[in-house]
Image (tube, rainbow, N blue to C red):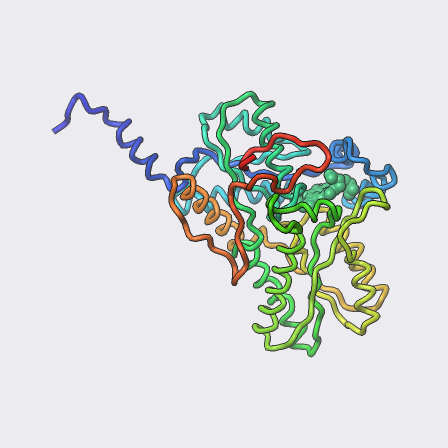
Length: 380
Ligand SMILES: CC1=C(CCC(=O)O)c2cc3nc(cc4[nH]c(cc5[nH]c(cc1n2)c(C)c5CCC(=O)O)c(CCC(=O)O)c4C)C(CCC(=O)O)=C3C
Ligand SMILES: [Fe+2]
């Protein structure tokens, strides 16, 4: 019997919404850095990235030349478009489809424009997922500042949360373990004992020292990544039944020479390893989830050249992003964050015994050392 008082659609729609696995969110923002996609886009991009940052002009010319080697095209935007579509497919297959859109800091589509679009499409609560997995101002809080600026610029009323920093999640750490083991296995089978050289983006010492919660020990950026490097060395050694050696190094230093940045530089480290008698390096850019200019230039071009010069073998491990374990893992992280937003206490999965970190950044987390700026998704 049909009750004429009962609206047929709204009630079931409401029930369906309440049961949506990603509730309370109604849209997902994939948040990234952006990169140029043609020769004419390089300089404007570099000017935007370095505006007010005291990067010497020589460095801009040098970095511009790296991009021009690839016809001015960074791999980052294309890979992000692919990730967007992979995420949409995975979300659909797992019954948690929502609008999902890309918003960049430095190239179109910019975060503010994307947030305006999502709001115009009816979104109220947005879940942000950055393409940067680690904790420091540049890799975490600056994205939170982008959200605050974006909401302001768009003039929209959106509540935004973000997934926790996720370098230790199986999406990243577990995927690296598999990719690295697969890269090392054939070498070990040939009797080679490669050195496992992990690489992340260098940052100023001061940014590393202040990374992590304000009341913590600092150095969250380098400590988390050293912890991953150690766990991966142990994992690959066990998996292949050999005792391998390895450690973390850094690429893409910029800024004035008198300002200390994290070291050793990957090229210097390769030279040192060759002098120590190492015959092969396997380079895993664990600081990045996908190929960026830093990976295709600083590693595949420059570091590979250094290895050839000093006469040692060089293998670069693929980055996690195109794998199904990475894409599925990001969706797991989104579901975890949604459960937290509903007041549940989901298990925080991490790879091996690596530590996880809060989804809502604690006060003073990864401060902006030049100009304090409002940021979303934190307690301050
Ligand atoms: C920690 C970190 C990440 C990882 C986290 C994340 O992914 O966000 C990252 C990512 C990226 N950095 C990128 C490009 C650049 N970064 C620069 C400058 C800087 N990066 C820094 C740090 C980081 N950067 C820092 C402390 C500076 C100094 C000036 C400043 O404090 O801002 C400059 C200026 C020229 C130069 O000095 O090299 C460029 C062109 C691209 C795009 C690549 C592409 O096109 O494929 C991506 C993904
Ligand atoms: Fe950078």
